[in-house]
Image (cartoon, rainbow, N blue to C red; front, side, top):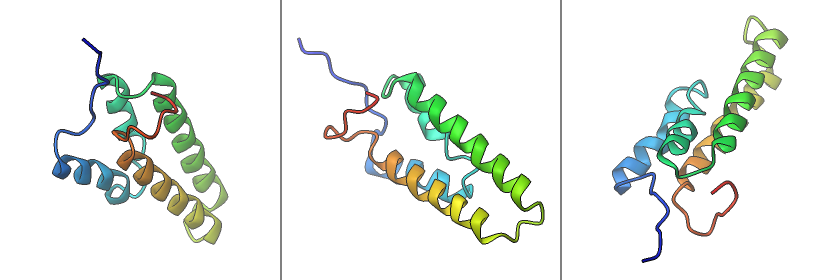
Length: 101
């Protein structure tokens, strides 16, 4: 019997909900889908660690760069984190993507 890789999403609705997590939380929860995927065995743990480190770095830089939150650079960083995290979350069950699996 061939071994199947575990799946992250049970349905299309679950995929949409998980993809919306980084968007709705405004990047604060961008690493959550990857931590859950690592626990489920969908991706290797280093993928989740990378996302947690990047999230902490970006949120730390954004807080240090503009404590008032009025910097276009900070907004760009947050938008890039949201878009990247949402896109990668949607690709977690793709068989075409093999990095980190």
